[in-house]
Picture: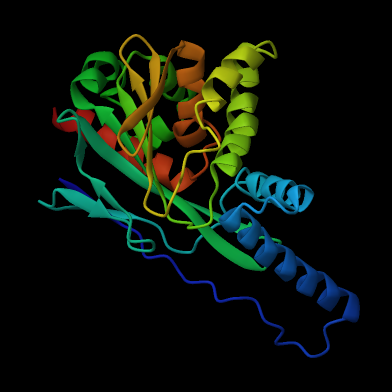
Length: 287
């Protein structure tokens, strides 16, 4: 099996090592830190006493989840290992090397967000899986002669990966203990919504609502919770939370839009996508 190890650098809480920092910058830094703190408290406790503050802070966190990952100086390396699971070393999130006895782990990424440039939050780790037989059947003949470098530059490959009838799963494991379902739903409304418009035009609000309405306020997303977004045969998007199915929507456009977040032209984590392409290139070569 393939082992992926991610030695991330740590980011200490912000401080003010420069005593000459201008007063207005100090005020901004202090205010941002307070907002970040109260955002966590609001999301953690779901206070009903101050709904305006709660909704505002949830809105801020949701939009922080939509921005691209900040670059990290260290990234994954691939090495052979007989392990039945792979651990993301920064967060300790563990991913099985296979799902459903058919889908193989291709790469791991980390959604890390920065609040006002002062505090870094690891939101969730994710693993990208694909059915090996489906990959060989749909993509090998066309791409087996291309190197990993060529595949990374191939827009046709990106398009085929997103549109082919290949069983794939993105497994999200929550590592931020104060994440609310409301924040996840808001983040998907914007990110998936933008992809639906990108691939299918602006008239897909009903489809977006069918997807995001699966994430209901009463659901709990404790640290360690697992969300799986799976494209099944026939382009059916199946969503599960901690192993319980919460929805199944037949839509090629929706499947394409969700997967584009992780393995498309502008993915959440570019390094994770590169791992996926490297693994597939190796698979085409060796099978």
